[in-house]
Length: 301
Image (cartoon, rainbow, N blue to C red; front, side, top):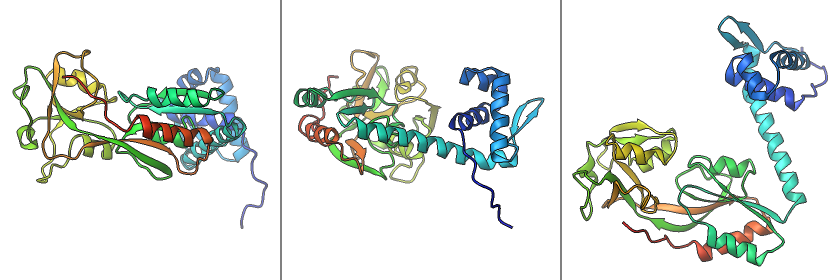
């Protein structure tokens, strides 16, 4: 017989307490992350369980374990929190149409377009935000940024993407590497050289060129968390890396150099916005980005 009891009025703070506890699987660490006491966290979880009419957490000598109901609730709880965050951000954006946050990833210069936006819209509240290489889509959909100048590839569903320019992909090597100083190389020249790995399969496939055109897999190098990690790994001789020509290490890492790679498609720099966003400042920034950011900056070797 179906449950006809009224739906629970979920307290978002209680839901957040549960998701943080599920992440840490330990009341002490979760309480520290939430800046509350363990006893307070325990009471919040009990309140949530009472609201839901289900036990979510079992304490064990090794820490905390999700019950079957807890495992079911966890992804739903995360979705509830995301929806609440998006609802808050969209409402604030509607109430403050003269505000825009522009994201950018490593070594992509947005200053000329931002300067033009501020000049043309002096009353606008314009902010910029640096994003990790794997962050742009989530930052846009969560309304942390309203526009982002970034490098493909990343999932573009629900986004509007405007191509700004193409950028050659080059091989990053130490200055004493056997290929340093060559006019160009082919992938056959580095067939046995390990290449750093990331966590995103699409990003890896593009920036490792994996698999190679002949079907061979790129040899695995160290796992990296940030794009900039490649520089130290390459400098130490653990791997070579494929990077955009505008990677921006010149003057910072004189122990590294790049060599053009023949026969590979270029990297693509784009402006990404939410597909349904009609904010006048987003429309204006797209115009200024196309005018000022549509050419790859020149780099010195």
